Figure 1 (cartoon, rainbow, N blue to C red):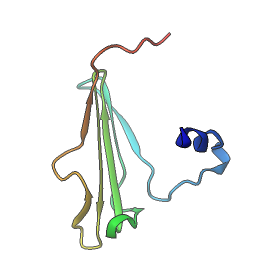
Figure 2 (cartoon, rainbow, N blue to C red):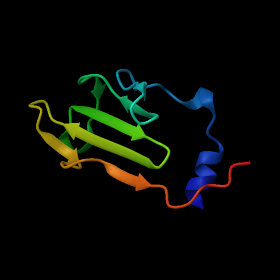
Figure 3 (cartoon, helix red, strand yellow):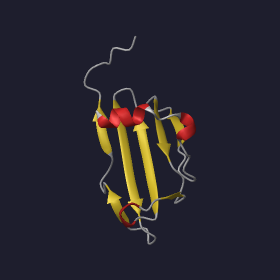
Figure 4 (cartoon, helix red, strand yellow):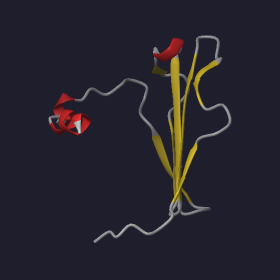
Amino acid sequence: MEKIRTLAGLTPDSLTARQGCAMTIKKQDDNNGFYGTMPGKECASARKGASYAISEFSLTADVFTTWERRFDANDRQVWGSEHGGYVFKKIKPYPFR
């Protein structure tokens, strides 16, 4: 509950864009989904000895995959999954109305 109260006061003007961390999102014609990634090594990160971050995702009607990784100045991965992203599979329809 504490996190919910903390986020309740968050407004768009209180956010700061991180330079180099914008995602490019493209529609995938082969699976009717979307794919997003950040370009190159431009998203600076200091988490656990990292120099830069890479984030990517794919989204289809049934599966959402997200892969977050951080690398040091020598391009060695220092944080995140080494073997692929987290995969979230739809198990029942959400009742959008």
